[in-house]
Length: 394
Image (cartoon, rainbow, N blue to C red; front, side, top):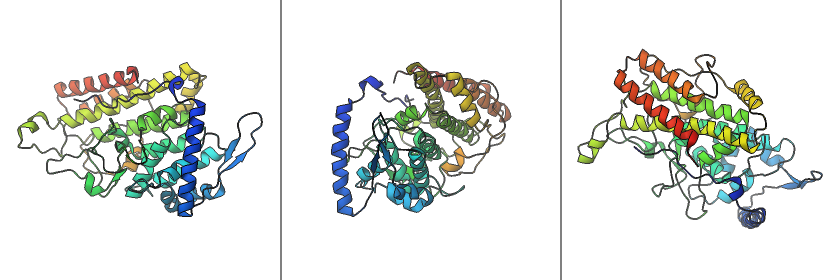
Protein backbone atom coordinates (compact mmCIF):
# COMPACT_ATOMS: atom_id res chain seq x y z
CA UNK A 1 0.00 0.00 0.00
CA UNK A 2 1.41 3.34 -0.97
CA UNK A 3 1.98 6.31 1.26
CA UNK A 4 -0.58 8.71 -0.20
CA UNK A 5 -0.30 12.47 -0.24
CA UNK A 6 3.38 12.85 0.62
CA UNK A 7 4.92 15.93 -0.94
CA UNK A 8 7.50 18.41 0.13
CA UNK A 9 6.62 21.69 1.81
CA UNK A 10 9.44 24.17 2.22
CA UNK A 11 9.50 26.58 5.14
CA UNK A 12 8.78 30.20 4.38
CA UNK A 13 12.45 31.02 4.95
CA UNK A 14 13.42 28.65 2.16
CA UNK A 15 11.21 30.29 -0.45
CA UNK A 16 12.89 32.30 -3.24
CA UNK A 17 14.17 35.68 -2.15
CA UNK A 18 12.27 38.84 -2.94
CA UNK A 19 14.78 39.91 -5.60
CA UNK A 20 14.56 36.52 -7.26
CA UNK A 21 10.80 36.72 -7.21
CA UNK A 22 10.87 40.21 -8.70
CA UNK A 23 13.17 39.04 -11.48
CA UNK A 24 10.93 36.06 -12.15
CA UNK A 25 7.84 38.27 -12.17
CA UNK A 26 9.55 40.72 -14.58
CA UNK A 27 10.51 37.95 -16.97
CA UNK A 28 7.07 36.38 -16.74
CA UNK A 29 5.37 39.72 -17.32
CA UNK A 30 7.53 40.27 -20.40
CA UNK A 31 6.60 36.84 -21.73
CA UNK A 32 2.93 37.43 -21.03
CA UNK A 33 3.08 40.79 -22.77
CA UNK A 34 4.39 39.10 -25.91
CA UNK A 35 1.67 36.45 -25.71
CA UNK A 36 -1.05 39.06 -25.27
CA UNK A 37 0.26 41.14 -28.13
CA UNK A 38 0.32 38.07 -30.36
CA UNK A 39 -3.22 37.10 -29.46
CA UNK A 40 -4.59 40.65 -29.35
CA UNK A 41 -5.91 39.92 -25.84
CA UNK A 42 -5.81 42.69 -23.26
CA UNK A 43 -5.58 42.04 -19.52
CA UNK A 44 -5.02 45.54 -18.10
CA UNK A 45 -3.48 45.87 -14.67
CA UNK A 46 -3.17 49.20 -12.92
CA UNK A 47 -1.01 50.03 -9.95
CA UNK A 48 -2.51 52.10 -7.16
CA UNK A 49 -0.88 53.98 -4.34
CA UNK A 50 -1.41 52.16 -1.06
CA UNK A 51 0.25 54.66 1.26
CA UNK A 52 3.40 53.61 3.07
CA UNK A 53 3.35 49.99 1.81
CA UNK A 54 4.01 48.61 -1.66
CA UNK A 55 1.48 49.66 -4.29
CA UNK A 56 -1.57 47.48 -4.71
CA UNK A 57 -2.80 46.25 -8.08
CA UNK A 58 -6.23 47.18 -9.34
CA UNK A 59 -8.24 44.28 -10.71
CA UNK A 60 -9.63 45.67 -13.96
CA UNK A 61 -13.33 45.82 -14.70
CA UNK A 62 -12.91 43.40 -17.59
CA UNK A 63 -11.59 40.76 -15.18
CA UNK A 64 -14.29 41.43 -12.59
CA UNK A 65 -16.96 41.02 -15.26
CA UNK A 66 -15.87 37.42 -15.82
CA UNK A 67 -17.42 36.42 -12.47
CA UNK A 68 -20.87 37.08 -13.97
CA UNK A 69 -20.14 35.25 -17.23
CA UNK A 70 -19.01 31.69 -16.46
CA UNK A 71 -18.52 30.75 -20.11
CA UNK A 72 -16.23 33.74 -20.67
CA UNK A 73 -14.44 33.04 -17.38
CA UNK A 74 -13.75 29.46 -18.43
CA UNK A 75 -12.36 30.64 -21.76
CA UNK A 76 -10.13 33.15 -19.98
CA UNK A 77 -8.72 30.62 -17.51
CA UNK A 78 -8.53 27.62 -19.85
CA UNK A 79 -4.82 27.13 -20.63
CA UNK A 80 -5.61 24.93 -23.60
CA UNK A 81 -4.74 21.29 -23.98
CA UNK A 82 -1.22 22.29 -24.97
CA UNK A 83 -0.96 24.76 -22.04
CA UNK A 84 -0.07 27.55 -24.47
CA UNK A 85 -2.27 30.06 -22.60
CA UNK A 86 -0.91 29.23 -19.15
CA UNK A 87 1.22 32.41 -18.84
CA UNK A 88 -1.88 34.53 -19.51
CA UNK A 89 -3.90 32.56 -16.94
CA UNK A 90 -1.17 32.97 -14.35
CA UNK A 91 -1.02 36.70 -14.93
CA UNK A 92 -4.79 36.99 -14.57
CA UNK A 93 -5.25 35.09 -11.29
CA UNK A 94 -2.00 35.64 -9.41
CA UNK A 95 -2.06 38.98 -7.61
CA UNK A 96 -0.01 39.57 -4.48
CA UNK A 97 -1.70 42.80 -3.39
CA UNK A 98 -5.02 43.42 -5.13
CA UNK A 99 -6.65 46.71 -4.23
CA UNK A 100 -9.91 46.97 -2.32
CA UNK A 101 -12.18 44.00 -2.86
CA UNK A 102 -10.01 42.73 -5.71
CA UNK A 103 -9.15 39.48 -3.90
CA UNK A 104 -12.82 38.57 -3.51
CA UNK A 105 -13.37 39.42 -7.18
CA UNK A 106 -10.55 37.10 -8.24
CA UNK A 107 -11.98 34.30 -6.10
CA UNK A 108 -15.35 34.79 -7.76
CA UNK A 109 -13.74 34.58 -11.22
CA UNK A 110 -12.00 31.32 -10.26
CA UNK A 111 -15.32 29.85 -9.12
CA UNK A 112 -17.16 30.97 -12.24
CA UNK A 113 -14.51 29.48 -14.52
CA UNK A 114 -14.07 26.10 -12.87
CA UNK A 115 -17.12 24.98 -10.92
CA UNK A 116 -19.99 22.92 -12.30
CA UNK A 117 -22.73 24.98 -13.89
CA UNK A 118 -25.46 23.67 -11.56
CA UNK A 119 -26.18 20.74 -9.22
CA UNK A 120 -26.09 17.50 -11.16
CA UNK A 121 -23.93 18.95 -13.93
CA UNK A 122 -20.55 17.31 -14.65
CA UNK A 123 -17.41 19.35 -15.20
CA UNK A 124 -16.40 20.01 -18.78
CA UNK A 125 -12.88 19.46 -20.09
CA UNK A 126 -12.35 23.22 -20.33
CA UNK A 127 -13.44 23.73 -16.71
CA UNK A 128 -11.13 20.93 -15.56
CA UNK A 129 -8.21 22.41 -17.48
CA UNK A 130 -8.95 25.79 -15.91
CA UNK A 131 -8.92 24.22 -12.43
CA UNK A 132 -5.52 22.70 -13.13
CA UNK A 133 -4.22 26.05 -14.40
CA UNK A 134 -5.43 27.91 -11.30
CA UNK A 135 -3.70 25.45 -8.95
CA UNK A 136 -0.50 25.63 -11.00
CA UNK A 137 -0.66 29.44 -11.23
CA UNK A 138 -0.99 29.78 -7.46
CA UNK A 139 1.90 27.44 -6.67
CA UNK A 140 4.05 29.03 -3.93
CA UNK A 141 1.82 32.11 -4.04
CA UNK A 142 0.64 34.05 -1.03
CA UNK A 143 -3.08 33.87 -1.76
CA UNK A 144 -4.46 37.29 -0.78
CA UNK A 145 -7.06 37.62 1.96
CA UNK A 146 -10.50 37.37 0.45
CA UNK A 147 -9.51 35.12 -2.45
CA UNK A 148 -8.99 31.98 -0.37
CA UNK A 149 -12.69 30.99 0.04
CA UNK A 150 -13.29 31.10 -3.72
CA UNK A 151 -10.23 28.98 -4.44
CA UNK A 152 -11.26 26.55 -1.67
CA UNK A 153 -14.71 26.17 -3.25
CA UNK A 154 -13.01 25.31 -6.52
CA UNK A 155 -10.92 22.59 -4.85
CA UNK A 156 -14.03 21.27 -3.09
CA UNK A 157 -15.73 20.98 -6.49
CA UNK A 158 -12.84 18.71 -7.59
CA UNK A 159 -12.56 16.74 -4.35
CA UNK A 160 -12.12 13.41 -6.17
CA UNK A 161 -9.38 14.76 -8.45
CA UNK A 162 -7.62 16.62 -5.64
CA UNK A 163 -7.78 13.40 -3.64
CA UNK A 164 -5.86 11.32 -6.13
CA UNK A 165 -2.90 13.69 -6.27
CA UNK A 166 0.09 11.73 -4.99
CA UNK A 167 3.35 12.64 -6.68
CA UNK A 168 4.74 13.89 -9.98
CA UNK A 169 3.80 11.55 -12.80
CA UNK A 170 5.21 11.08 -16.26
CA UNK A 171 2.04 9.32 -17.39
CA UNK A 172 -0.14 12.42 -17.69
CA UNK A 173 -0.82 13.65 -21.18
CA UNK A 174 -2.46 16.98 -20.37
CA UNK A 175 -4.02 19.13 -17.64
CA UNK A 176 -7.35 17.29 -17.92
CA UNK A 177 -8.86 14.11 -19.31
CA UNK A 178 -12.22 13.36 -20.89
CA UNK A 179 -14.83 11.13 -19.29
CA UNK A 180 -13.89 8.43 -21.80
CA UNK A 181 -10.23 8.60 -20.83
CA UNK A 182 -11.13 8.33 -17.12
CA UNK A 183 -13.65 5.51 -17.56
CA UNK A 184 -12.99 2.22 -15.70
CA UNK A 185 -11.56 -0.69 -17.69
CA UNK A 186 -13.00 -4.21 -17.85
CA UNK A 187 -11.78 -4.89 -14.32
CA UNK A 188 -13.47 -1.80 -12.90
CA UNK A 189 -10.14 0.00 -12.56
CA UNK A 190 -9.31 3.61 -13.35
CA UNK A 191 -6.51 5.77 -12.02
CA UNK A 192 -8.97 8.64 -11.57
CA UNK A 193 -10.84 7.17 -8.61
CA UNK A 194 -13.83 5.07 -7.68
CA UNK A 195 -17.53 5.76 -8.33
CA UNK A 196 -16.92 8.34 -11.05
CA UNK A 197 -19.86 10.11 -12.63
CA UNK A 198 -20.43 9.25 -16.29
CA UNK A 199 -19.74 12.09 -18.68
CA UNK A 200 -17.49 14.07 -16.34
CA UNK A 201 -14.05 15.38 -17.25
CA UNK A 202 -11.30 15.31 -14.64
CA UNK A 203 -8.41 17.62 -13.83
CA UNK A 204 -5.12 15.74 -13.79
CA UNK A 205 -3.17 17.42 -11.01
CA UNK A 206 -0.33 14.94 -11.47
CA UNK A 207 0.45 16.29 -14.92
CA UNK A 208 3.69 18.21 -15.41
CA UNK A 209 3.92 20.36 -18.51
CA UNK A 210 7.38 20.21 -20.11
CA UNK A 211 7.06 23.45 -22.11
CA UNK A 212 5.52 25.90 -19.64
CA UNK A 213 7.07 24.12 -16.64
CA UNK A 214 3.64 24.26 -15.01
CA UNK A 215 3.10 21.95 -12.05
CA UNK A 216 0.02 21.75 -9.85
CA UNK A 217 0.42 21.04 -6.13
CA UNK A 218 -3.07 21.05 -4.58
CA UNK A 219 -1.71 19.85 -1.26
CA UNK A 220 0.63 22.85 -1.09
CA UNK A 221 -2.20 25.19 -2.06
CA UNK A 222 -4.42 23.70 0.66
CA UNK A 223 -1.71 24.54 3.18
CA UNK A 224 -1.79 28.17 2.06
CA UNK A 225 -5.58 28.38 2.08
CA UNK A 226 -5.93 26.77 5.51
CA UNK A 227 -4.95 29.96 7.34
CA UNK A 228 -8.31 31.43 6.30
CA UNK A 229 -11.11 30.09 8.57
CA UNK A 230 -13.78 30.11 5.87
CA UNK A 231 -11.51 28.31 3.41
CA UNK A 232 -10.52 25.84 6.15
CA UNK A 233 -14.20 25.07 6.80
CA UNK A 234 -14.94 24.61 3.09
CA UNK A 235 -12.08 22.16 2.64
CA UNK A 236 -12.89 20.29 5.88
CA UNK A 237 -16.54 19.98 4.87
CA UNK A 238 -15.61 18.67 1.43
CA UNK A 239 -13.31 15.96 2.78
CA UNK A 240 -15.82 14.79 5.38
CA UNK A 241 -18.58 14.79 2.76
CA UNK A 242 -16.38 12.71 0.46
CA UNK A 243 -15.65 10.27 3.30
CA UNK A 244 -19.38 9.64 3.87
CA UNK A 245 -20.04 9.53 0.12
CA UNK A 246 -17.31 6.92 -0.34
CA UNK A 247 -18.32 4.67 2.56
CA UNK A 248 -21.96 4.41 1.53
CA UNK A 249 -21.00 3.09 -1.90
CA UNK A 250 -18.87 0.22 -0.59
CA UNK A 251 -20.19 -3.31 -0.21
CA UNK A 252 -21.15 -4.75 3.17
CA UNK A 253 -17.62 -6.17 3.24
CA UNK A 254 -16.09 -2.76 2.77
CA UNK A 255 -15.07 -3.47 -0.80
CA UNK A 256 -15.36 -1.87 -4.21
CA UNK A 257 -18.60 -3.11 -5.84
CA UNK A 258 -17.14 -2.43 -9.31
CA UNK A 259 -14.03 -4.56 -8.79
CA UNK A 260 -13.53 -7.40 -11.26
CA UNK A 261 -10.58 -9.73 -10.61
CA UNK A 262 -8.08 -10.11 -13.44
CA UNK A 263 -6.47 -13.23 -14.80
CA UNK A 264 -2.84 -12.15 -14.63
CA UNK A 265 -0.72 -13.38 -11.69
CA UNK A 266 0.05 -9.79 -10.66
CA UNK A 267 -3.68 -9.16 -10.22
CA UNK A 268 -3.65 -11.52 -7.25
CA UNK A 269 -2.17 -8.67 -5.24
CA UNK A 270 -5.24 -6.52 -5.91
CA UNK A 271 -8.49 -7.35 -4.16
CA UNK A 272 -11.88 -5.67 -3.79
CA UNK A 273 -10.57 -3.83 -0.71
CA UNK A 274 -7.18 -2.72 -2.02
CA UNK A 275 -8.23 0.61 -3.52
CA UNK A 276 -10.93 1.43 -0.97
CA UNK A 277 -8.22 1.09 1.68
CA UNK A 278 -5.94 3.42 -0.25
CA UNK A 279 -8.67 5.96 -0.92
CA UNK A 280 -9.91 6.06 2.68
CA UNK A 281 -6.30 6.38 3.78
CA UNK A 282 -5.83 9.42 1.53
CA UNK A 283 -9.00 11.14 2.77
CA UNK A 284 -8.03 10.63 6.42
CA UNK A 285 -4.49 11.84 5.77
CA UNK A 286 -5.72 15.03 4.12
CA UNK A 287 -7.99 15.79 7.08
CA UNK A 288 -5.03 15.24 9.38
CA UNK A 289 -3.00 17.57 7.17
CA UNK A 290 -5.61 20.30 7.62
CA UNK A 291 -5.11 20.07 11.37
CA UNK A 292 -1.35 20.18 10.87
CA UNK A 293 -1.65 23.34 8.77
CA UNK A 294 -3.78 24.88 11.51
CA UNK A 295 -1.04 24.18 14.05
CA UNK A 296 1.75 25.42 11.77
CA UNK A 297 -0.06 28.68 11.01
CA UNK A 298 -0.73 29.17 14.72
CA UNK A 299 2.95 28.73 15.58
CA UNK A 300 4.01 31.12 12.81
CA UNK A 301 1.54 33.77 13.94
CA UNK A 302 -0.49 33.70 10.73
CA UNK A 303 -3.34 32.49 12.94
CA UNK A 304 -2.85 34.96 15.82
CA UNK A 305 -5.72 33.63 17.97
CA UNK A 306 -6.49 29.95 17.45
CA UNK A 307 -9.57 30.11 19.67
CA UNK A 308 -11.06 32.88 17.54
CA UNK A 309 -10.00 30.97 14.42
CA UNK A 310 -11.82 27.81 15.58
CA UNK A 311 -14.95 29.79 16.37
CA UNK A 312 -14.87 31.29 12.88
CA UNK A 313 -14.40 27.82 11.36
CA UNK A 314 -17.40 26.58 13.35
CA UNK A 315 -19.53 29.41 11.99
CA UNK A 316 -18.65 28.47 8.42
CA UNK A 317 -18.87 24.70 8.85
CA UNK A 318 -22.10 23.34 7.40
CA UNK A 319 -22.51 20.39 9.77
CA UNK A 320 -21.95 16.63 10.02
CA UNK A 321 -22.00 14.11 7.20
CA UNK A 322 -23.15 10.56 7.86
CA UNK A 323 -23.07 7.68 5.41
CA UNK A 324 -26.39 6.15 4.37
CA UNK A 325 -27.48 3.00 6.20
CA UNK A 326 -27.88 1.14 2.89
CA UNK A 327 -25.54 0.80 -0.06
CA UNK A 328 -25.90 3.65 -2.53
CA UNK A 329 -25.43 2.99 -6.25
CA UNK A 330 -25.69 6.51 -7.71
CA UNK A 331 -22.63 8.16 -9.26
CA UNK A 332 -23.06 11.93 -8.85
CA UNK A 333 -20.59 14.43 -10.31
CA UNK A 334 -17.88 15.82 -8.08
CA UNK A 335 -19.58 19.12 -7.38
CA UNK A 336 -22.51 17.27 -5.83
CA UNK A 337 -20.24 15.37 -3.43
CA UNK A 338 -19.06 18.48 -1.62
CA UNK A 339 -22.53 19.97 -1.87
CA UNK A 340 -24.37 17.01 -0.38
CA UNK A 341 -26.87 17.85 2.40
CA UNK A 342 -25.58 17.60 5.95
CA UNK A 343 -26.92 14.94 8.29
CA UNK A 344 -27.18 17.28 11.24
CA UNK A 345 -25.07 19.56 13.45
CA UNK A 346 -21.49 18.75 14.33
CA UNK A 347 -21.02 16.71 17.50
CA UNK A 348 -17.89 16.71 19.60
CA UNK A 349 -14.75 18.75 19.12
CA UNK A 350 -14.70 20.27 15.66
CA UNK A 351 -10.94 20.05 15.21
CA UNK A 352 -10.71 16.47 16.49
CA UNK A 353 -10.67 15.01 13.00
CA UNK A 354 -9.99 11.51 14.29
CA UNK A 355 -13.23 11.56 16.30
CA UNK A 356 -15.20 12.98 13.37
CA UNK A 357 -13.91 10.27 11.01
CA UNK A 358 -14.18 7.26 13.32
CA UNK A 359 -17.66 8.22 14.50
CA UNK A 360 -18.89 8.15 10.89
CA UNK A 361 -17.01 4.93 10.14
CA UNK A 362 -18.38 3.12 13.22
CA UNK A 363 -21.95 4.21 12.50
CA UNK A 364 -21.65 3.00 8.90
CA UNK A 365 -20.15 -0.34 9.92
CA UNK A 366 -22.89 -0.90 12.50
CA UNK A 367 -25.72 -0.04 10.12
CA UNK A 368 -24.29 -2.27 7.36
CA UNK A 369 -23.38 -5.20 9.65
CA UNK A 370 -19.78 -5.09 8.52
CA UNK A 371 -17.72 -7.84 10.15
CA UNK A 372 -15.72 -6.76 13.18
CA UNK A 373 -12.50 -7.90 11.52
CA UNK A 374 -13.07 -5.70 8.47
CA UNK A 375 -14.36 -2.76 10.50
CA UNK A 376 -11.30 -2.95 12.78
CA UNK A 377 -8.96 -3.06 9.79
CA UNK A 378 -10.62 0.01 8.28
CA UNK A 379 -10.49 1.79 11.62
CA UNK A 380 -6.74 1.18 11.89
CA UNK A 381 -6.17 2.41 8.34
CA UNK A 382 -8.11 5.63 8.92
CA UNK A 383 -6.60 6.27 12.34
CA UNK A 384 -3.02 5.68 11.20
CA UNK A 385 -3.44 7.85 8.11
CA UNK A 386 -4.98 10.69 10.12
CA UNK A 387 -2.09 10.69 12.58
CA UNK A 388 0.41 10.53 9.71
CA UNK A 389 -1.29 13.56 8.15
CA UNK A 390 -0.81 15.50 11.38
CA UNK A 391 2.79 14.56 12.01
CA UNK A 392 4.21 14.01 8.54
CA UNK A 393 7.17 16.33 8.10
CA UNK A 394 6.40 18.05 4.81
